Amino acid sequence: MTENSRPIIVAYGPLYPYLMEGLERRFTVHCVAADADLATLDPAVRNARALVSFGSVGASAAIMDALPKLEMIGLFSVGYDKVDVDHARAQGIRVSNTPDVLTDDVADLAVGLLYATVRNIAANDRMVRSGAWERGEKPALSGRVTGRTIGILGLGRIGRAIAMRVAPVAGEIIYHNRRKAPESPYRYVADPIAFARESDVLIVATSGGPEAAKLVDAAILDALGAEGVIINISRGSVIDENALVAALADKRIAGAGLDVFVAEPHVPSALMAMDHVVLQPHQGSATVQTRAAMADLVLANLDAHFAGKPLVTPVV
Image (cartoon, rainbow, N blue to C red; front, side, top):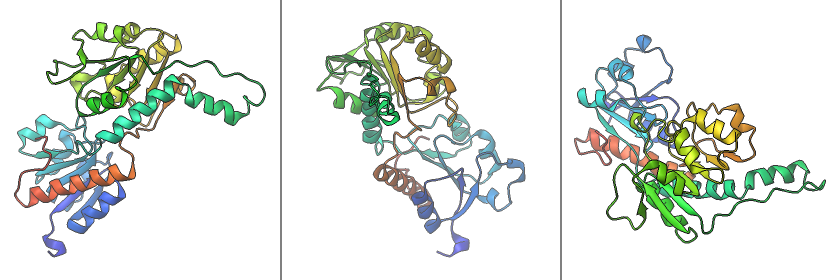
């Protein structure tokens, strides 16, 4: 295949280097910043037949309309809440994502955040490093994980993987979905307030999107209670962040382990000042092995599309 005969691809926003290398081997790639002025795109870019982006960048209706020959959007993420899926469907633009390959690593991080938060691991690490322990300061007693009721909000692929990991130590696993999962061995709690009230730890693993915005609100946090802990490896938008900050500040919940935030990479300064909060810079899928597998899946979807075959992991 000559350079001129290669399909033109837009790399929309920064991409993982391994993925960029794979794209450049196959396609003619034009890099477009996520905040680019779409009215001034180079004419060559407007010939792009596919767009590839991180899930946090996605693809708006505006970027789709700015690329009149666009046929496909390949997402380097499982979440597609930043893609205007309805617009893509209306325009006949195919969309793919990268499910399954990141499930284990995201579930591992959720469990890591669970233990780090409940057992004060990050705060105690800071105490040791600062010399406070050597000077005689005593660490606060922590909570415990073993025997607690662990509530999983969203028993999808990742939620089930989390449940499998905590099952050996949990007193009980309960879950809340929009509907009951008939194949699940765990107890379903249909009412979200009752679900939160029964949970000692609430792990947010639901998908994002407008329908899930602020699903965890002040009422849910109050129901979780003063000894409750919340873990979020889903999307920052699923929790009412202002309500969460207030609940943590007032000690109406015991702590939080957070990998995601509403306006990433911005994190509310109040959270950074709290010792009962563990923060991560959106690292759920950030292992060498998983990022390579995600990139391979993006490339496999693109290869399938340009070969006239069904997408490997279609969203639209």
